[in-house]
Image: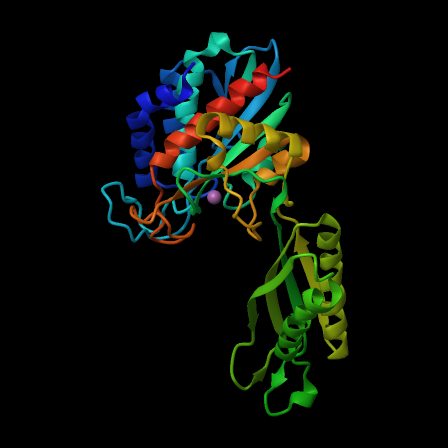
Length: 388
Ligand code: NI
């Protein structure tokens, strides 16, 4: 089968779907209409599917005579007011597909249509995973909990990327994206009159001191050759200028590529915050919420995906300048369970003004990239199933 040619023939189908999803963005766990729309398309093609993880869908194409390969698209949008003025602009106030998941969904539906046409030629099963709630880092976990990965031998995922020119693909081994955890610290002091500080225990001072001292984790306690981030994004305390604050709340995030360091940072945060609180006669309680682990690509799958890209678009299509990211992706949960690869497909085009960063209110994608992504989905699945 000539994949490139066949994808080109359904170009309008893919682009129209993407625009339709773009016009109707829905936030994480509330992708109701999106989910219905995907099901409609699958029904039109007589592709069997089942619902999973609330608004998620798993569709299957092929047979059980060989291996099973998973293809994943995330389907949720973001709480951002779109500033673009294209004909396909978001119709929903305060909501926007500002990360390209509209394109991911359209590409996977395009791939489904062509894979279904060639179902008899497949030497195994292709499982299409339409995943909700990626932006919360929760959807993938739920899909796994509900058995969505059972029987899968390998998994492939695509993120369109505005920081890479259209026509290029970043397919890199090892940890390519960081883990992302959340911590919150509750500080207890003792209230009082602002004019008589000695009678109280100032939770605002404790909170401020903890924020400053947490900066020493990365600068003083972590190997400088190991990237890590500890950011406090929220610190609230007090009610009025002349009252000693009796409580403070602090929230932050931890990012790293190394599971051991990740665990050690959670312990350091607790040690430092409790120690500081005690120094100032107060108390601190930490809650640490583990988010997605680092995205770690399997070496063999990386080699295989590169071969797929090269066979279709030549050696020059591979892009090696994309740095590792401290950003996270819940695709990481799948890669903890089965080997596979998460790749970035360039969608940045200066002339078309599609090079704004992801999550920006002017974000947009070069729709030519949709054809490349669809083609890679198909090539990866078909070739993987053929592999001995
Ligand atoms: Ni995204």
